[in-house]
Image (tube, rainbow, N blue to C red; front, side, top):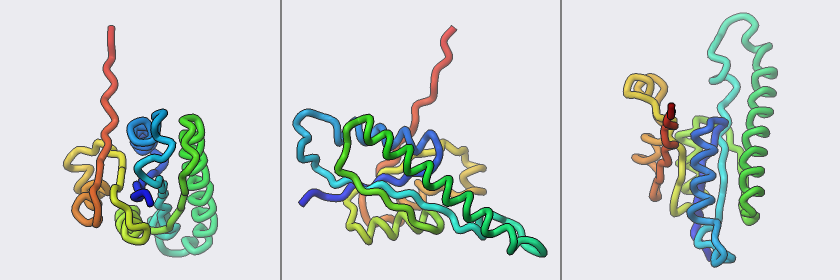
Length: 160
């Protein structure tokens, strides 16, 4: 039985780059009819209440709309990942959407699926933004019970 490689995705281009990078290096070759990993792609959808970030009168009425939008965003994100896998002819893959803080969702899923490797993209935040928003990759690198591979999207160079 192949080890599990989990790829955490969100709607960002950094995340989709990390997925493509992973597919190109681990799942695309003529000799990979039996790839060394079972691929599991996970999208962590935030709770509607955490995405709303407001309280007081009217907040409760907005929750169903926010939740609906988050579900649609998750569906688009998973569809984009499925499309990337399909264009690269990677078929033996499972997809999952879990609700909660991405840091905890990813670490819990690593344990649940006994993943050997967790691959996540780096958003390239600076120190201040990382301190304010928190870094999913930093958290997972310290708390996931497996190897964590952080894939950085190269900066594009402008040529004259």
